Length: 150
Image (tube, rainbow, N blue to C red):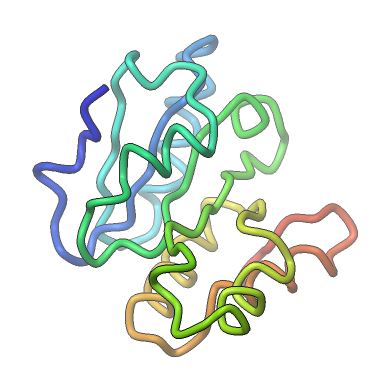
């Protein structure tokens, strides 16, 4: 499967569709994402159907300046919040040492977030203002496990 990132802009948030069972739900997710002025790159190719987090990480491992991807998976398409799965693309090799990697993944290597929060997460991770583990912890602390921007 092609990674679909060839035409991605340097500052684009990457949204990868992995569920192809409901085109209407996908249109709703896209509409929710595009309501917010941000740079988005959609990977919408049926070759990604059913892709797991590990599949996505393998396919995107060589992408430069990409620390997070947002997956529109089965849960996204069928949840009222349209909660995307935010996944860190950073590996142990990207971290200074084992302690840094342990801190990065302490709350997991992924978390759920609303479409409205994608610009906040992507911008803050891109400029290093906040770290992935902070967002993951906030998501885990919420009653439904979904991060929502303030």
